[in-house]
Length: 98
Image (tube, rainbow, N blue to C red):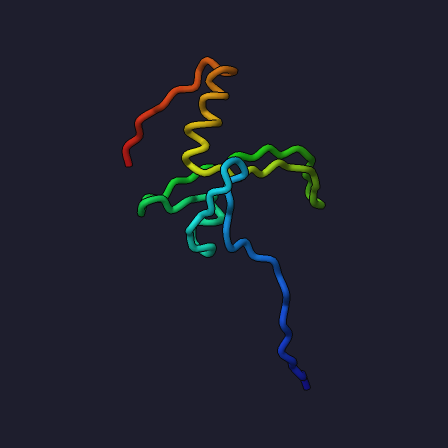
């Protein structure tokens, strides 16, 4: 015979992101676009991911460290892009079609 009990499992869940530069708060649903780092701005989804990882992986697992930075679309365009243009000569705005 098996006896079952209901268990409550606590877990952390991201419910909002805040821009690390200007403090703007996101207003997206955490279940849909949050994991992709998207922002809902005037009914337009904008996706920005800035991350650096170092570490190792093997068949048994792995570990490492990472920087995960939250940047809103405005700060990406007004702060990060101009800075990178001073360091990198090949950064350019490209058109895309879906």
